[in-house]
Length: 460
Ligand SMILES: C=C(O[C@H]1C=CC=C(C(=O)O)[C@@H]1O)C(=O)O
Ligand SMILES: [Mg+2]
Image (cartoon, rainbow, N blue to C red; front, side):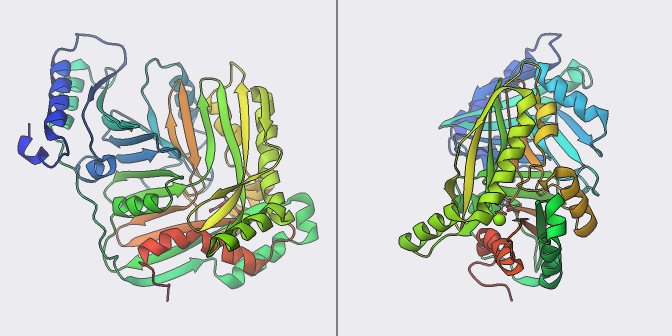
């Protein structure tokens, strides 16, 4: 084992002992085991994101829940499931099989916003990975695990692959705060004049009568003078918004998708489900008094209330046939982030025995927080008028397992390819939306990530 290289681990000896334990257990594996096997050892404190950034294997997947209790760095592939279309029956089979697999193996991945749009290469319409190695922090307890799948290529080959992955591990790579690279160019799609036309169209009485809400999105593309490190950016982003989900997917060296999303699609623990309507936005105030007054205005504002209500009603309607019972808070509360505050309504349900992640994803995604209401006519408008495919922006990202599944709504996200970063922001357009105010809302939603990318400077 490359002992020397491992020295910078915070608790090198404990980490090396954990790798040694896993190696021993791999060598002593019985001649046969059920299809998936996961071996785990306590490994002492290691920063999961820095650890991930230091490795040579792909994919590199990072996930941190909104309560910060759990953080996972997932590396390499034990099984990789990629689907180019929503009609692929393999996706349905995968979602159904995951529910019946024993053990606590988790698949990490995501589903694009739109089943029909062109997919980002490497990401596909949907992609889920059972990682080869996982470094997990639960509260302050750190563990390293290795996954095997005997159906891959037979036990001997699978054991060799697992050993090779463990022996190839490198030390964490510190993610220091470096001065950001200079922006060479930037562009918005759509630009404001087109945005104004679209918002005017969506708020016309004729359109609004049949489609009362459409979430329109803008892509802001920045080109930098040098390549950006997705993990450095995500690290700083999570420090500014610790109460968000934080996640990143880097399937290969060419592209990565990272997000600091405030919004949960759902968390399912056995048959208990938590979901929410997060929609309706104001900026944060410059001081406490202004902040509170903006929050009170947001709570009293009918346009923002309507944005939130369409989401709540749609989720309640979608969950009703899948649940024993479902309930939502009567009134939204305020959910504060670094630069914006939102209306947030909690939703809880107990699922029927036959309801699984396949039914939940089909019923809930995309919610009117990112698509619109009714779903089909909002999607038709988005497909016909947005010229940049959203890819995984506004998709659903998270993990799947038999006992517990969680998906975040992949907003406040960035798609990085070398020197280029594409940021996305959407705004719910309802009766009463004004083009200028909704455009400012897009800017407000990007303020946090832009403050990191531009280091406090404004875009030229
Ligand atoms: C679609 C986005 O935000 C959604 C979530 C919260 C508030 C929203 C709003 O007020 O318009 C959006 O529905 C985005 O950030 O890209
Ligand atoms: Mg809004």
